[in-house]
Amino acid sequence: MSSPAAGPVVRRNDYAPLAPPSGEWAPRLSVSVVVPAQGKQERLDVVLAALAAQSYPAGLLEVVVVDDGSEPPLRLPELRPANAKIVPPLPGGRASAHATNSGVARSDGDIVLRLDSDMLAFGDHVESQMR
Image (cartoon, rainbow, N blue to C red; front, side, top):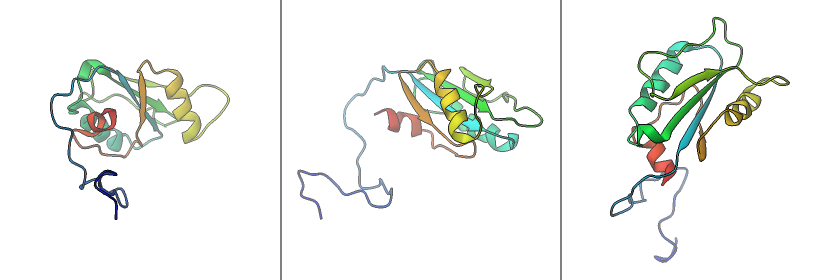
């Protein structure tokens, strides 16, 4: 058990014991969400829709999808964040880690957040990570 000064204990990624920060919080850093992807357009569509509904300010959010050799190539759906793009991986590698690094290299955000192409994020996911 932790002492009150140490704060609550988080076990097995269960963040329920943590209380949201109190008071006003004004985001100021931009975030690039890098999503390495290969195929499964329908899953990517849902991920991008979830990112479009984030509580983090849209003007500070960029999404970089790295299409790692999909056939047919991935496309941006209608429901997506305003600042979203699909890029190919950089030459000289392949697989998820290389695709992630390729996305980071093409990102403009102050912070990089990586999501899998089948990871459904809650509406406050980006904001929670940025806090």
